[in-house]
Image (cartoon, rainbow, N blue to C red; front, side):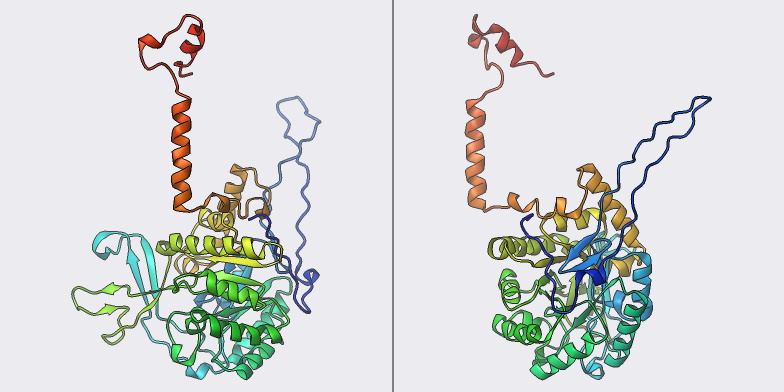
Length: 425
């Protein structure tokens, strides 16, 4: 997907405000060996450059804290910046936090070992957590403080509101005044308040989505990403609507609606709150293949329908290694978000992610993210085309046979070539 270039700047948000200067690469002098001095200097090969510029926002690396508990207050967001994350998306805020009532426990885990052994690797994670239950004014003060302390780092506000134009406009205006760099619109939370037309209730209804995106983009003066729900038949439909309605980018995927399981001793569902539960959002390693498919479909749609315009794509789902991130980027993602991975492994995982991604880039001689972004898209096709390709390959292999099938095929004129055709090295 190399034809997609995502550098659009919106409103009053110039690139220069967010740029970071990378240290100059110098020369290293070889050490002295024995009594002989080697006076020549050799230049070390520079490390692959992980920095990205997305919708005019410059990030030192493509790794972004996904909206959720890892971005729930000033202390944890500051920690994320200090650890080196490329950007932070705060936990979703709305105008009236008093309506948000969380419960505990609100998480449940799926392990790889049979019968849910506590020693098994965690591959699935369900949450029934709602958006931020902290007063909006408190969150706004913390956004402002973070931007004052980290003016060159990217802070993105995740917002969600009821089906009310005035409410959306007020929320956008108040959040923008803190100096945040962009919005991510939560059109995808699979649980919580669908009766108030919030979250996935909007993202699953393209007519509603188009209307709300229109309100948002008429008001916002900073880049807007629409976060997509996977709980639809064809994720390209809402993604297309969001981009056509003025959003600069899309993020995918949010969590998948799920029931983690039933406790076979108590016969109660998990996570269990006073003996009861409710379906929630599924994340972690087990959703990674599903997320890749959704991102691939969005990326192909963006390339074919919006290829000459500047839009961005943020990949989300089961990222715990640099290789996981590379897969999203190979499918066209500009950035990669991590939420559950931070909850499981801590904020320091970003160092591992960066190191492993650079190792992958060195292996293939990629010097920048753009060198390999989207290069795997061309290898996806239809099943009908796969059948055609395989039939053609079989015919070609039959036409160019290797070696002789029997002694009667030896000829005097082609003896040397016939011999060579059966040599393995």
